[in-house]
Length: 148
Image 1: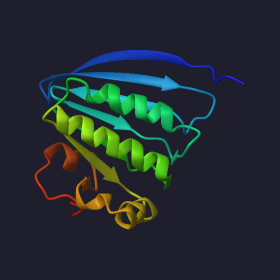
Image 2 (image 1 turned 90 degrees about the horizontal axis):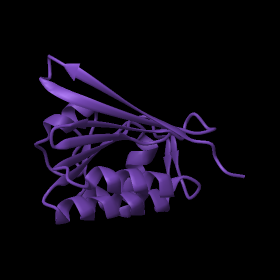
Image 3 (image 1 turned 60 degrees about the vertical axis):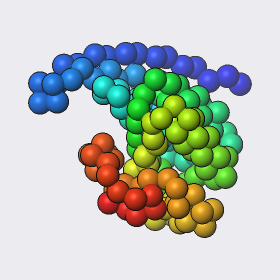
């Protein structure tokens, strides 16, 4: 059974940021499996679903790779993510490699301790930048594996 999808783009001018923000919404039958991408000059923020597993990792991988194209920094907002399996970790590592190859970077925003633990156990916390909030990730400037 296929998933019905609809896409929508909305452009806003935010005087406080002096930047145009493009919000792209992709929805399907499961509300926790939507991807939201927000673009600022040189930065794209991709919101990950509540659970990342084999069932939805292809969509996340596509969103991450698309976001990495032509952007200096990709911020992955996983603050609402409660579960991430090895396929999700592999997608994030792949996106990290792609952004690094293009001279950019990948920053993760983590909320759940269970997800943070997965990155520690797998060792990817040694090279992925992890932050406590999207504003902190946008500001950047700290060492991988150390939450800020």
